Length: 622
Image (cartoon, rainbow, N blue to C red):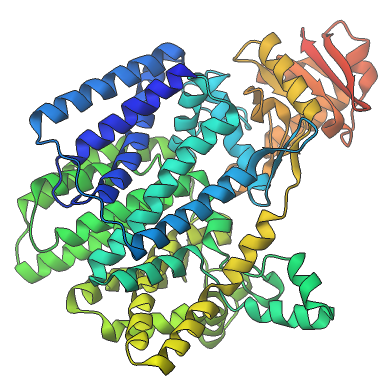
Protein backbone atom coordinates (compact mmCIF):
# COMPACT_ATOMS: atom_id res chain seq x y z
CA UNK A 1 0.00 0.00 0.00
CA UNK A 2 2.93 2.34 0.67
CA UNK A 3 4.07 2.02 -2.94
CA UNK A 4 0.57 2.93 -4.19
CA UNK A 5 0.61 6.00 -1.93
CA UNK A 6 4.02 7.03 -3.31
CA UNK A 7 2.67 6.64 -6.85
CA UNK A 8 -0.35 8.78 -6.00
CA UNK A 9 1.75 11.54 -4.41
CA UNK A 10 4.17 11.49 -7.36
CA UNK A 11 1.36 11.69 -9.90
CA UNK A 12 -0.35 14.59 -8.14
CA UNK A 13 2.98 16.38 -7.62
CA UNK A 14 3.60 16.17 -11.35
CA UNK A 15 0.09 17.39 -12.13
CA UNK A 16 0.38 20.37 -9.78
CA UNK A 17 3.86 21.25 -11.06
CA UNK A 18 2.55 21.20 -14.62
CA UNK A 19 -0.30 23.50 -13.64
CA UNK A 20 2.23 26.23 -12.74
CA UNK A 21 3.08 26.58 -16.44
CA UNK A 22 -0.37 27.74 -17.55
CA UNK A 23 -1.89 31.13 -16.81
CA UNK A 24 -5.44 30.03 -17.61
CA UNK A 25 -5.38 27.90 -14.45
CA UNK A 26 -5.89 31.01 -12.37
CA UNK A 27 -7.63 29.63 -9.27
CA UNK A 28 -7.03 26.66 -7.00
CA UNK A 29 -9.99 24.59 -8.20
CA UNK A 30 -8.74 24.88 -11.77
CA UNK A 31 -5.29 23.78 -10.63
CA UNK A 32 -6.68 20.83 -8.67
CA UNK A 33 -8.92 19.71 -11.55
CA UNK A 34 -5.99 19.90 -13.94
CA UNK A 35 -3.57 18.21 -11.52
CA UNK A 36 -5.87 15.25 -10.85
CA UNK A 37 -6.42 14.66 -14.56
CA UNK A 38 -2.79 15.20 -15.61
CA UNK A 39 -1.53 13.04 -12.74
CA UNK A 40 -3.71 10.04 -13.59
CA UNK A 41 -2.98 10.36 -17.32
CA UNK A 42 0.79 10.77 -16.92
CA UNK A 43 1.20 7.99 -14.36
CA UNK A 44 -0.80 5.57 -16.51
CA UNK A 45 1.17 6.33 -19.66
CA UNK A 46 4.59 6.18 -18.00
CA UNK A 47 3.87 2.92 -16.19
CA UNK A 48 2.35 1.39 -19.34
CA UNK A 49 5.32 2.25 -21.56
CA UNK A 50 7.79 0.92 -18.97
CA UNK A 51 5.78 -2.27 -18.48
CA UNK A 52 5.39 -2.86 -22.20
CA UNK A 53 9.12 -2.39 -22.75
CA UNK A 54 10.07 -4.70 -19.86
CA UNK A 55 7.31 -7.25 -20.44
CA UNK A 56 5.76 -7.05 -16.97
CA UNK A 57 4.07 -4.71 -14.52
CA UNK A 58 5.99 -5.11 -11.25
CA UNK A 59 6.57 -3.17 -8.07
CA UNK A 60 9.86 -2.03 -9.61
CA UNK A 61 7.96 -0.49 -12.55
CA UNK A 62 5.64 1.33 -10.15
CA UNK A 63 8.65 2.60 -8.17
CA UNK A 64 10.45 3.82 -11.30
CA UNK A 65 7.27 5.48 -12.54
CA UNK A 66 7.00 7.35 -9.25
CA UNK A 67 10.64 8.42 -9.47
CA UNK A 68 10.21 9.67 -13.05
CA UNK A 69 7.12 11.69 -12.15
CA UNK A 70 8.79 13.21 -9.09
CA UNK A 71 11.89 14.10 -11.10
CA UNK A 72 9.72 15.64 -13.82
CA UNK A 73 7.78 17.61 -11.19
CA UNK A 74 10.98 19.00 -9.69
CA UNK A 75 12.29 19.92 -13.14
CA UNK A 76 9.06 21.75 -14.05
CA UNK A 77 9.02 23.60 -10.72
CA UNK A 78 12.57 24.82 -11.32
CA UNK A 79 11.65 26.07 -14.79
CA UNK A 80 8.40 27.77 -13.74
CA UNK A 81 7.11 30.21 -11.16
CA UNK A 82 5.36 27.98 -8.61
CA UNK A 83 2.28 29.50 -7.06
CA UNK A 84 -0.84 28.10 -5.45
CA UNK A 85 -3.66 30.24 -6.81
CA UNK A 86 -6.39 31.63 -4.52
CA UNK A 87 -9.45 29.51 -3.85
CA UNK A 88 -12.66 31.03 -5.19
CA UNK A 89 -15.51 29.16 -3.57
CA UNK A 90 -19.06 30.42 -3.81
CA UNK A 91 -22.50 29.05 -4.57
CA UNK A 92 -21.48 27.81 -8.01
CA UNK A 93 -18.50 25.89 -6.68
CA UNK A 94 -20.61 24.46 -3.85
CA UNK A 95 -23.11 23.11 -6.38
CA UNK A 96 -20.31 21.53 -8.40
CA UNK A 97 -18.94 19.94 -5.26
CA UNK A 98 -22.40 18.47 -4.69
CA UNK A 99 -22.36 16.97 -8.20
CA UNK A 100 -18.94 15.47 -7.58
CA UNK A 101 -20.03 14.04 -4.24
CA UNK A 102 -23.01 12.46 -5.99
CA UNK A 103 -20.64 10.69 -8.38
CA UNK A 104 -18.40 9.76 -5.47
CA UNK A 105 -21.27 8.23 -3.49
CA UNK A 106 -22.43 6.23 -6.50
CA UNK A 107 -18.89 4.95 -7.07
CA UNK A 108 -18.39 4.13 -3.40
CA UNK A 109 -21.78 2.52 -3.02
CA UNK A 110 -21.87 0.68 -6.32
CA UNK A 111 -18.41 -0.78 -7.02
CA UNK A 112 -17.52 -3.99 -5.16
CA UNK A 113 -19.34 -3.13 -1.94
CA UNK A 114 -19.44 -5.80 0.76
CA UNK A 115 -22.60 -7.91 0.62
CA UNK A 116 -22.40 -8.73 4.35
CA UNK A 117 -21.60 -12.40 3.63
CA UNK A 118 -18.01 -12.06 2.42
CA UNK A 119 -18.98 -11.42 -1.18
CA UNK A 120 -18.99 -8.30 -3.36
CA UNK A 121 -21.90 -6.44 -4.96
CA UNK A 122 -22.27 -3.89 -7.73
CA UNK A 123 -25.08 -1.67 -8.89
CA UNK A 124 -26.80 -2.29 -12.23
CA UNK A 125 -24.66 -1.35 -15.25
CA UNK A 126 -21.57 -1.60 -13.04
CA UNK A 127 -22.55 -5.25 -12.48
CA UNK A 128 -22.63 -5.78 -16.23
CA UNK A 129 -19.70 -3.63 -17.39
CA UNK A 130 -17.08 -3.70 -14.66
CA UNK A 131 -16.34 -7.41 -14.85
CA UNK A 132 -14.66 -6.69 -18.20
CA UNK A 133 -12.63 -3.87 -16.67
CA UNK A 134 -11.61 -6.16 -13.80
CA UNK A 135 -10.38 -8.71 -16.35
CA UNK A 136 -8.15 -6.03 -17.92
CA UNK A 137 -6.88 -4.70 -14.58
CA UNK A 138 -6.01 -8.12 -13.16
CA UNK A 139 -4.55 -9.37 -16.47
CA UNK A 140 -1.85 -6.71 -16.19
CA UNK A 141 -1.36 -6.90 -12.43
CA UNK A 142 -1.56 -10.69 -11.99
CA UNK A 143 -1.25 -12.10 -15.51
CA UNK A 144 1.66 -10.06 -16.96
CA UNK A 145 -0.34 -9.41 -20.13
CA UNK A 146 2.37 -8.00 -22.42
CA UNK A 147 2.14 -7.26 -25.25
CA UNK A 148 -1.50 -6.65 -24.32
CA UNK A 149 -3.90 -9.36 -25.45
CA UNK A 150 -7.62 -9.73 -24.86
CA UNK A 151 -7.75 -11.73 -21.62
CA UNK A 152 -11.18 -13.05 -22.68
CA UNK A 153 -10.40 -14.06 -26.28
CA UNK A 154 -7.38 -16.15 -27.18
CA UNK A 155 -5.23 -14.74 -29.96
CA UNK A 156 -6.73 -11.24 -30.11
CA UNK A 157 -4.50 -8.21 -29.44
CA UNK A 158 -6.02 -5.86 -26.86
CA UNK A 159 -6.97 -2.94 -29.07
CA UNK A 160 -9.66 -1.77 -26.65
CA UNK A 161 -8.70 1.62 -25.07
CA UNK A 162 -7.45 0.40 -21.69
CA UNK A 163 -5.35 3.21 -20.21
CA UNK A 164 -7.77 4.02 -17.38
CA UNK A 165 -7.78 0.34 -16.41
CA UNK A 166 -4.00 0.22 -16.56
CA UNK A 167 -3.90 3.07 -14.06
CA UNK A 168 -5.79 0.80 -11.66
CA UNK A 169 -3.41 -2.08 -12.44
CA UNK A 170 -0.47 0.04 -11.27
CA UNK A 171 -2.23 0.91 -8.01
CA UNK A 172 -3.16 -2.76 -7.54
CA UNK A 173 0.48 -3.78 -7.90
CA UNK A 174 1.32 -0.92 -5.54
CA UNK A 175 -0.65 -2.62 -2.78
CA UNK A 176 -4.24 -1.39 -2.99
CA UNK A 177 -7.18 -3.80 -3.10
CA UNK A 178 -9.00 -4.31 -6.38
CA UNK A 179 -11.87 -2.11 -5.15
CA UNK A 180 -9.59 0.71 -3.98
CA UNK A 181 -7.42 0.55 -7.10
CA UNK A 182 -10.58 1.22 -9.12
CA UNK A 183 -12.13 3.81 -6.84
CA UNK A 184 -9.02 6.00 -6.49
CA UNK A 185 -8.58 6.97 -10.17
CA UNK A 186 -12.36 7.03 -10.60
CA UNK A 187 -12.74 9.67 -7.88
CA UNK A 188 -9.77 11.75 -9.05
CA UNK A 189 -10.97 11.84 -12.65
CA UNK A 190 -14.61 12.35 -11.65
CA UNK A 191 -13.60 15.50 -9.75
CA UNK A 192 -11.83 16.78 -12.85
CA UNK A 193 -14.76 15.77 -15.05
CA UNK A 194 -17.32 17.78 -13.06
CA UNK A 195 -15.24 20.90 -12.58
CA UNK A 196 -13.80 20.95 -16.10
CA UNK A 197 -17.37 20.74 -17.45
CA UNK A 198 -18.16 23.88 -15.46
CA UNK A 199 -14.96 25.70 -16.44
CA UNK A 200 -15.52 24.97 -20.13
CA UNK A 201 -19.14 26.14 -19.91
CA UNK A 202 -17.96 29.28 -18.10
CA UNK A 203 -15.41 29.97 -20.82
CA UNK A 204 -18.11 29.56 -23.47
CA UNK A 205 -20.79 31.66 -21.76
CA UNK A 206 -19.04 33.93 -19.27
CA UNK A 207 -21.97 33.27 -16.93
CA UNK A 208 -21.63 31.25 -13.70
CA UNK A 209 -25.33 30.54 -13.32
CA UNK A 210 -25.67 29.33 -16.90
CA UNK A 211 -22.60 27.14 -16.44
CA UNK A 212 -24.05 25.54 -13.29
CA UNK A 213 -27.34 24.86 -15.08
CA UNK A 214 -25.37 23.36 -17.98
CA UNK A 215 -23.53 21.05 -15.57
CA UNK A 216 -26.84 20.03 -13.96
CA UNK A 217 -28.43 19.31 -17.34
CA UNK A 218 -25.40 17.25 -18.35
CA UNK A 219 -24.78 15.14 -15.24
CA UNK A 220 -28.39 14.86 -14.07
CA UNK A 221 -29.71 14.61 -17.60
CA UNK A 222 -33.17 13.25 -18.09
CA UNK A 223 -35.61 12.84 -20.97
CA UNK A 224 -39.34 12.42 -21.36
CA UNK A 225 -39.18 9.19 -19.39
CA UNK A 226 -40.61 11.10 -16.44
CA UNK A 227 -44.02 10.91 -18.15
CA UNK A 228 -43.93 7.12 -17.73
CA UNK A 229 -42.96 7.56 -14.09
CA UNK A 230 -46.11 9.57 -13.43
CA UNK A 231 -48.19 7.12 -15.45
CA UNK A 232 -46.89 4.14 -13.45
CA UNK A 233 -47.21 5.96 -10.14
CA UNK A 234 -50.85 6.83 -10.76
CA UNK A 235 -51.56 3.26 -11.82
CA UNK A 236 -49.92 1.88 -8.65
CA UNK A 237 -52.55 3.38 -6.37
CA UNK A 238 -49.98 4.09 -3.66
CA UNK A 239 -47.62 6.90 -4.62
CA UNK A 240 -45.49 6.73 -1.47
CA UNK A 241 -44.87 3.00 -1.74
CA UNK A 242 -44.20 3.34 -5.45
CA UNK A 243 -41.59 6.10 -5.02
CA UNK A 244 -39.90 4.28 -2.14
CA UNK A 245 -39.35 1.21 -4.33
CA UNK A 246 -39.00 2.44 -7.91
CA UNK A 247 -39.42 -0.43 -10.37
CA UNK A 248 -37.29 0.94 -13.20
CA UNK A 249 -34.69 3.45 -14.40
CA UNK A 250 -37.01 6.07 -15.86
CA UNK A 251 -34.42 7.63 -18.16
CA UNK A 252 -34.40 4.33 -20.05
CA UNK A 253 -37.76 3.22 -21.44
CA UNK A 254 -36.92 1.01 -24.45
CA UNK A 255 -40.55 0.12 -25.14
CA UNK A 256 -41.22 3.82 -25.71
CA UNK A 257 -38.09 4.32 -27.79
CA UNK A 258 -36.23 6.22 -25.02
CA UNK A 259 -32.56 5.19 -25.00
CA UNK A 260 -30.56 8.32 -24.12
CA UNK A 261 -30.12 7.29 -20.51
CA UNK A 262 -28.77 9.39 -17.69
CA UNK A 263 -25.07 9.71 -18.46
CA UNK A 264 -23.80 9.05 -14.94
CA UNK A 265 -25.84 5.83 -14.94
CA UNK A 266 -24.89 4.72 -18.44
CA UNK A 267 -21.45 6.25 -19.09
CA UNK A 268 -19.57 8.04 -16.33
CA UNK A 269 -19.63 5.30 -13.72
CA UNK A 270 -19.86 2.00 -15.62
CA UNK A 271 -17.62 2.87 -18.60
CA UNK A 272 -14.21 3.69 -17.19
CA UNK A 273 -12.53 4.63 -20.47
CA UNK A 274 -15.20 7.26 -21.09
CA UNK A 275 -14.60 8.94 -17.71
CA UNK A 276 -10.99 9.72 -18.51
CA UNK A 277 -11.62 10.28 -22.22
CA UNK A 278 -14.38 12.84 -21.77
CA UNK A 279 -12.52 14.69 -19.00
CA UNK A 280 -9.56 15.06 -21.37
CA UNK A 281 -11.96 16.17 -24.11
CA UNK A 282 -13.37 18.93 -21.92
CA UNK A 283 -9.88 20.29 -21.22
CA UNK A 284 -9.02 20.00 -24.91
CA UNK A 285 -12.14 21.93 -25.97
CA UNK A 286 -11.36 24.60 -23.38
CA UNK A 287 -7.86 25.03 -24.82
CA UNK A 288 -9.21 24.95 -28.36
CA UNK A 289 -11.75 27.67 -27.66
CA UNK A 290 -9.13 29.84 -25.98
CA UNK A 291 -6.67 29.55 -28.85
CA UNK A 292 -8.86 29.98 -31.90
CA UNK A 293 -8.28 33.75 -31.79
CA UNK A 294 -5.08 34.35 -29.84
CA UNK A 295 -2.28 31.83 -29.98
CA UNK A 296 -0.53 30.61 -26.82
CA UNK A 297 2.24 28.18 -27.71
CA UNK A 298 2.23 26.37 -24.37
CA UNK A 299 -1.53 25.89 -24.45
CA UNK A 300 -1.45 24.69 -28.06
CA UNK A 301 1.29 22.22 -27.17
CA UNK A 302 -0.77 20.94 -24.24
CA UNK A 303 -3.85 20.58 -26.47
CA UNK A 304 -1.80 18.60 -29.01
CA UNK A 305 -0.44 16.24 -26.35
CA UNK A 306 -3.92 15.70 -24.92
CA UNK A 307 -5.42 14.90 -28.32
CA UNK A 308 -2.47 12.67 -29.23
CA UNK A 309 -2.91 10.70 -26.00
CA UNK A 310 -6.59 9.93 -26.57
CA UNK A 311 -6.73 6.85 -28.86
CA UNK A 312 -5.66 4.40 -26.13
CA UNK A 313 -7.68 6.33 -23.55
CA UNK A 314 -11.01 6.50 -25.34
CA UNK A 315 -11.26 6.08 -29.09
CA UNK A 316 -14.68 7.71 -29.41
CA UNK A 317 -13.43 10.87 -27.68
CA UNK A 318 -10.47 10.94 -30.06
CA UNK A 319 -12.86 10.76 -33.02
CA UNK A 320 -15.07 13.54 -31.62
CA UNK A 321 -12.21 15.87 -30.66
CA UNK A 322 -10.47 15.36 -34.01
CA UNK A 323 -13.68 16.07 -35.90
CA UNK A 324 -14.42 19.26 -33.93
CA UNK A 325 -10.85 20.56 -34.05
CA UNK A 326 -10.53 19.76 -37.74
CA UNK A 327 -13.67 21.67 -38.70
CA UNK A 328 -12.85 24.68 -36.52
CA UNK A 329 -9.30 24.93 -37.83
CA UNK A 330 -10.39 24.53 -41.44
CA UNK A 331 -12.84 27.36 -40.83
CA UNK A 332 -10.03 29.53 -39.44
CA UNK A 333 -7.79 28.72 -42.40
CA UNK A 334 -10.59 29.63 -44.81
CA UNK A 335 -11.21 32.93 -42.98
CA UNK A 336 -7.58 33.98 -42.67
CA UNK A 337 -6.38 32.53 -45.98
CA UNK A 338 -3.30 31.16 -44.22
CA UNK A 339 -2.15 28.26 -42.10
CA UNK A 340 -0.61 29.21 -38.76
CA UNK A 341 2.68 27.48 -37.96
CA UNK A 342 1.55 26.70 -34.41
CA UNK A 343 -1.27 24.52 -35.70
CA UNK A 344 1.03 22.74 -38.15
CA UNK A 345 3.41 21.87 -35.34
CA UNK A 346 0.49 20.80 -33.18
CA UNK A 347 -0.82 18.53 -35.94
CA UNK A 348 2.62 16.95 -36.26
CA UNK A 349 2.70 16.25 -32.51
CA UNK A 350 -0.79 14.74 -32.60
CA UNK A 351 0.19 12.51 -35.53
CA UNK A 352 3.44 11.39 -33.86
CA UNK A 353 1.59 10.42 -30.69
CA UNK A 354 -1.66 9.09 -32.13
CA UNK A 355 -0.60 7.15 -35.24
CA UNK A 356 1.20 4.33 -33.36
CA UNK A 357 -1.87 3.92 -31.15
CA UNK A 358 -4.22 3.95 -34.14
CA UNK A 359 -2.13 1.28 -35.89
CA UNK A 360 -2.37 -0.88 -32.77
CA UNK A 361 -6.13 -0.35 -32.49
CA UNK A 362 -6.57 -1.06 -36.22
CA UNK A 363 -5.64 -4.70 -35.55
CA UNK A 364 -9.08 -5.10 -33.98
CA UNK A 365 -11.21 -2.54 -35.80
CA UNK A 366 -12.31 -4.04 -39.09
CA UNK A 367 -14.68 -2.77 -41.75
CA UNK A 368 -17.68 -4.05 -39.78
CA UNK A 369 -16.85 -1.92 -36.74
CA UNK A 370 -18.33 1.23 -38.30
CA UNK A 371 -21.40 1.39 -40.50
CA UNK A 372 -24.39 3.38 -41.69
CA UNK A 373 -27.27 3.73 -39.25
CA UNK A 374 -30.13 6.15 -39.75
CA UNK A 375 -31.43 7.85 -36.62
CA UNK A 376 -28.87 6.43 -34.15
CA UNK A 377 -30.83 3.36 -33.02
CA UNK A 378 -31.77 0.41 -35.21
CA UNK A 379 -35.46 0.95 -34.49
CA UNK A 380 -35.24 4.10 -36.67
CA UNK A 381 -33.85 2.30 -39.73
CA UNK A 382 -37.11 2.59 -41.66
CA UNK A 383 -38.37 5.75 -39.97
CA UNK A 384 -39.11 9.04 -41.67
CA UNK A 385 -37.23 12.23 -40.80
CA UNK A 386 -40.28 13.37 -38.83
CA UNK A 387 -40.32 10.14 -36.80
CA UNK A 388 -36.61 10.53 -36.03
CA UNK A 389 -37.24 14.11 -34.92
CA UNK A 390 -39.97 12.87 -32.55
CA UNK A 391 -37.55 10.20 -31.33
CA UNK A 392 -35.00 12.86 -30.41
CA UNK A 393 -37.63 14.98 -28.64
CA UNK A 394 -38.43 11.98 -26.42
CA UNK A 395 -34.76 11.17 -25.84
CA UNK A 396 -33.39 14.67 -25.21
CA UNK A 397 -36.53 16.13 -23.70
CA UNK A 398 -36.85 19.75 -22.60
CA UNK A 399 -33.12 20.64 -22.99
CA UNK A 400 -33.44 20.10 -26.74
CA UNK A 401 -35.88 23.01 -27.05
CA UNK A 402 -33.90 25.10 -24.58
CA UNK A 403 -30.72 24.55 -26.58
CA UNK A 404 -32.38 25.70 -29.80
CA UNK A 405 -33.58 28.87 -28.04
CA UNK A 406 -30.16 29.30 -26.43
CA UNK A 407 -28.61 29.71 -29.87
CA UNK A 408 -30.20 33.16 -30.03
CA UNK A 409 -28.77 34.14 -26.62
CA UNK A 410 -25.25 32.96 -27.51
CA UNK A 411 -22.59 35.38 -28.71
CA UNK A 412 -20.79 35.02 -32.02
CA UNK A 413 -17.82 33.07 -30.60
CA UNK A 414 -20.04 30.49 -28.92
CA UNK A 415 -22.22 30.08 -32.00
CA UNK A 416 -19.20 29.51 -34.17
CA UNK A 417 -17.75 27.04 -31.70
CA UNK A 418 -21.08 25.18 -31.45
CA UNK A 419 -21.64 24.66 -35.18
CA UNK A 420 -19.17 21.73 -35.56
CA UNK A 421 -20.82 20.03 -32.58
CA UNK A 422 -24.16 20.35 -34.34
CA UNK A 423 -22.61 18.78 -37.43
CA UNK A 424 -21.23 15.95 -35.29
CA UNK A 425 -24.73 15.35 -33.91
CA UNK A 426 -26.07 15.09 -37.46
CA UNK A 427 -23.27 12.71 -38.40
CA UNK A 428 -24.24 10.44 -35.49
CA UNK A 429 -27.67 10.14 -37.10
CA UNK A 430 -26.10 8.54 -40.16
CA UNK A 431 -23.00 6.71 -38.92
CA UNK A 432 -22.72 3.92 -36.37
CA UNK A 433 -19.44 4.18 -34.47
CA UNK A 434 -19.45 0.65 -33.01
CA UNK A 435 -21.16 -2.65 -33.87
CA UNK A 436 -23.79 -2.03 -31.18
CA UNK A 437 -25.75 1.01 -32.32
CA UNK A 438 -26.35 2.35 -28.79
CA UNK A 439 -22.61 2.81 -28.29
CA UNK A 440 -22.66 5.79 -30.63
CA UNK A 441 -23.78 7.67 -27.50
CA UNK A 442 -20.06 7.80 -26.64
CA UNK A 443 -19.73 10.31 -29.49
CA UNK A 444 -23.15 11.90 -29.00
CA UNK A 445 -22.28 13.09 -25.50
CA UNK A 446 -19.90 15.64 -27.04
CA UNK A 447 -22.54 17.65 -28.93
CA UNK A 448 -24.96 16.99 -26.07
CA UNK A 449 -22.66 18.87 -23.70
CA UNK A 450 -22.61 21.96 -25.90
CA UNK A 451 -26.40 21.67 -26.18
CA UNK A 452 -26.56 21.74 -22.38
CA UNK A 453 -24.47 24.92 -22.38
CA UNK A 454 -26.91 26.60 -24.78
CA UNK A 455 -29.84 25.33 -22.69
CA UNK A 456 -28.24 26.83 -19.59
CA UNK A 457 -28.13 30.23 -21.29
CA UNK A 458 -31.84 29.98 -22.03
CA UNK A 459 -32.76 29.15 -18.45
CA UNK A 460 -30.73 32.05 -17.05
CA UNK A 461 -32.30 34.50 -19.47
CA UNK A 462 -35.79 33.26 -18.55
CA UNK A 463 -34.95 33.57 -14.85
CA UNK A 464 -33.93 37.21 -15.24
CA UNK A 465 -37.35 38.28 -16.51
CA UNK A 466 -39.15 38.32 -13.16
CA UNK A 467 -40.77 36.15 -10.50
CA UNK A 468 -43.29 34.45 -12.77
CA UNK A 469 -40.50 33.51 -15.13
CA UNK A 470 -38.45 32.18 -12.23
CA UNK A 471 -41.23 29.68 -11.60
CA UNK A 472 -41.15 28.74 -15.28
CA UNK A 473 -37.35 28.32 -15.20
CA UNK A 474 -37.63 26.10 -12.13
CA UNK A 475 -40.22 23.91 -13.83
CA UNK A 476 -38.03 23.63 -16.93
CA UNK A 477 -35.02 22.59 -14.86
CA UNK A 478 -37.09 20.00 -12.97
CA UNK A 479 -38.49 18.57 -16.21
CA UNK A 480 -34.97 18.39 -17.65
CA UNK A 481 -33.47 16.35 -14.82
CA UNK A 482 -36.36 14.48 -13.20
CA UNK A 483 -35.99 11.16 -15.02
CA UNK A 484 -32.23 11.31 -14.51
CA UNK A 485 -32.62 11.85 -10.77
CA UNK A 486 -35.19 9.05 -10.59
CA UNK A 487 -32.73 6.77 -12.36
CA UNK A 488 -30.07 7.49 -9.75
CA UNK A 489 -32.49 6.87 -6.89
CA UNK A 490 -33.47 3.52 -8.41
CA UNK A 491 -29.82 2.72 -9.12
CA UNK A 492 -28.60 3.33 -5.58
CA UNK A 493 -31.09 0.77 -4.28
CA UNK A 494 -30.05 -1.98 -6.66
CA UNK A 495 -27.16 -4.18 -5.43
CA UNK A 496 -26.94 -7.59 -7.11
CA UNK A 497 -24.06 -9.82 -5.99
CA UNK A 498 -21.26 -9.80 -8.53
CA UNK A 499 -18.88 -12.14 -6.71
CA UNK A 500 -20.05 -14.45 -3.89
CA UNK A 501 -17.43 -15.30 -1.27
CA UNK A 502 -16.78 -18.69 -2.85
CA UNK A 503 -15.54 -17.01 -6.04
CA UNK A 504 -13.06 -14.94 -4.04
CA UNK A 505 -11.74 -18.07 -2.33
CA UNK A 506 -11.26 -19.99 -5.58
CA UNK A 507 -9.77 -16.97 -7.37
CA UNK A 508 -7.18 -16.64 -4.63
CA UNK A 509 -6.23 -20.30 -5.11
CA UNK A 510 -5.89 -19.83 -8.87
CA UNK A 511 -3.65 -16.78 -8.41
CA UNK A 512 -1.43 -18.55 -5.88
CA UNK A 513 -1.14 -21.91 -7.64
CA UNK A 514 -1.05 -21.33 -11.39
CA UNK A 515 1.57 -19.53 -13.51
CA UNK A 516 0.77 -15.92 -14.43
CA UNK A 517 0.66 -16.70 -18.15
CA UNK A 518 -1.67 -19.70 -17.82
CA UNK A 519 -4.51 -20.16 -20.31
CA UNK A 520 -7.80 -21.55 -18.95
CA UNK A 521 -10.77 -23.23 -20.55
CA UNK A 522 -13.93 -21.82 -18.90
CA UNK A 523 -17.51 -20.91 -19.66
CA UNK A 524 -18.22 -17.45 -21.08
CA UNK A 525 -19.93 -16.10 -17.92
CA UNK A 526 -19.34 -12.36 -17.79
CA UNK A 527 -18.27 -12.43 -14.11
CA UNK A 528 -16.21 -15.59 -14.28
CA UNK A 529 -13.64 -15.56 -11.49
CA UNK A 530 -10.73 -16.81 -13.61
CA UNK A 531 -10.28 -13.78 -15.91
CA UNK A 532 -11.86 -11.11 -13.71
CA UNK A 533 -10.46 -11.91 -10.25
CA UNK A 534 -7.52 -14.23 -10.84
CA UNK A 535 -6.17 -12.34 -13.84
CA UNK A 536 -5.70 -15.42 -16.01
CA UNK A 537 -6.43 -15.55 -19.72
CA UNK A 538 -9.27 -17.70 -21.05
CA UNK A 539 -9.96 -19.14 -24.49
CA UNK A 540 -13.35 -17.46 -24.71
CA UNK A 541 -14.99 -15.09 -22.27
CA UNK A 542 -18.26 -13.19 -22.38
CA UNK A 543 -19.43 -13.00 -25.99
CA UNK A 544 -21.54 -9.88 -25.44
CA UNK A 545 -18.40 -7.78 -24.91
CA UNK A 546 -16.59 -9.35 -27.83
CA UNK A 547 -19.45 -8.64 -30.23
CA UNK A 548 -19.72 -4.99 -29.20
CA UNK A 549 -15.96 -4.65 -29.71
CA UNK A 550 -16.23 -6.00 -33.24
CA UNK A 551 -14.33 -9.25 -32.61
CA UNK A 552 -14.88 -12.55 -34.41
CA UNK A 553 -15.05 -15.34 -31.84
CA UNK A 554 -16.88 -17.98 -33.89
CA UNK A 555 -13.94 -20.43 -34.07
CA UNK A 556 -13.20 -20.20 -30.35
CA UNK A 557 -16.90 -20.69 -29.63
CA UNK A 558 -16.98 -23.96 -31.56
CA UNK A 559 -13.70 -25.18 -30.10
CA UNK A 560 -14.64 -24.45 -26.48
CA UNK A 561 -17.78 -26.55 -26.84
CA UNK A 562 -15.77 -29.32 -28.50
CA UNK A 563 -13.08 -29.36 -25.80
CA UNK A 564 -15.58 -29.68 -22.99
CA UNK A 565 -17.57 -32.32 -24.88
CA UNK A 566 -14.76 -34.54 -26.20
CA UNK A 567 -11.56 -33.55 -24.32
CA UNK A 568 -9.62 -34.18 -27.54
CA UNK A 569 -5.98 -33.25 -26.94
CA UNK A 570 -5.43 -31.85 -30.44
CA UNK A 571 -7.69 -28.87 -29.77
CA UNK A 572 -6.11 -28.24 -26.38
CA UNK A 573 -2.68 -28.21 -28.04
CA UNK A 574 -3.98 -25.87 -30.77
CA UNK A 575 -4.63 -23.16 -28.18
CA UNK A 576 -2.02 -24.15 -25.64
CA UNK A 577 -4.63 -24.57 -22.89
CA UNK A 578 -3.01 -25.14 -19.49
CA UNK A 579 -6.04 -25.67 -17.23
CA UNK A 580 -9.67 -26.71 -17.48
CA UNK A 581 -12.06 -25.04 -15.03
CA UNK A 582 -15.33 -26.70 -14.06
CA UNK A 583 -17.54 -24.85 -11.59
CA UNK A 584 -21.17 -23.78 -11.23
CA UNK A 585 -21.01 -21.54 -14.32
CA UNK A 586 -19.92 -24.49 -16.47
CA UNK A 587 -22.85 -26.70 -15.46
CA UNK A 588 -24.93 -25.68 -18.46
CA UNK A 589 -22.27 -26.88 -20.91
CA UNK A 590 -22.26 -30.35 -22.45
CA UNK A 591 -19.34 -31.64 -20.40
CA UNK A 592 -18.24 -35.27 -20.47
CA UNK A 593 -16.89 -35.33 -16.92
CA UNK A 594 -15.53 -38.88 -17.23
CA UNK A 595 -13.13 -37.85 -19.99
CA UNK A 596 -11.48 -35.38 -17.59
CA UNK A 597 -11.68 -37.50 -14.44
CA UNK A 598 -10.39 -40.77 -15.92
CA UNK A 599 -7.88 -39.61 -18.52
CA UNK A 600 -4.09 -39.43 -18.01
CA UNK A 601 -4.20 -36.24 -20.10
CA UNK A 602 -5.83 -34.30 -17.27
CA UNK A 603 -4.74 -34.00 -13.63
CA UNK A 604 -7.22 -32.83 -11.00
CA UNK A 605 -5.25 -30.19 -9.06
CA UNK A 606 -8.15 -28.55 -7.22
CA UNK A 607 -11.42 -29.99 -5.99
CA UNK A 608 -13.51 -28.14 -3.42
CA UNK A 609 -17.15 -27.85 -2.45
CA UNK A 610 -18.14 -24.34 -1.34
CA UNK A 611 -21.72 -23.36 -0.48
CA UNK A 612 -22.89 -26.66 -2.04
CA UNK A 613 -21.14 -25.75 -5.31
CA UNK A 614 -18.29 -27.89 -6.60
CA UNK A 615 -15.19 -26.30 -8.13
CA UNK A 616 -12.60 -28.35 -10.01
CA UNK A 617 -9.44 -27.40 -11.87
CA UNK A 618 -7.69 -29.89 -14.16
CA UNK A 619 -4.14 -29.36 -15.39
CA UNK A 620 -3.81 -30.24 -19.06
CA UNK A 621 -1.06 -32.80 -19.77
CA UNK A 622 -1.71 -33.31 -23.48
